[in-house]
Image (tube, rainbow, N blue to C red):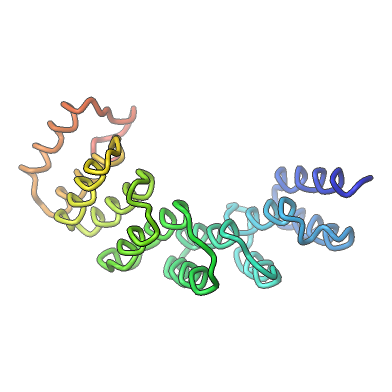
Length: 217
């Protein structure tokens, strides 16, 4: 079996992995066949260990430490994993380490980082500055994450500023953008403005998702 075929087979098996016992067997096989640093194979194995409900985040950390030059994907995966974990503050640690090591973040880096900040210190502004520094003010996915960050803290002024800035740069705000803005006003107890926002949302043509309240849309 050629290297390409072997790597493809192993990557497909990793994609269908259902538990850490299976993953460890596949990981050991990758070492035996010298595929443990193959980008696709390693990526599939690493993602399962890091973010699957049946994975093992400490094991993913050990895998990460063995990667000579982790790419944005591997950093993003750990940032994402910790944003869903009991240790969301570690997302910031890996984001900072990524920048220190000269690895360029992308829109997913910021989206996962901002999500983690909503569980830790939502009023810290340094991620907002980094969003502009790296030129992601035109990415709706990232802007929505910023709106959500400020909404969770009830910081209506900043949530609204991000929303308005998104409009200024030509982004087509969606139901997620509007919902974040509504959450910000509700959290701050500004119900009159929240109702006005809801009417503006309806007038814009945005529609909530079936089965959700406007705040959850």
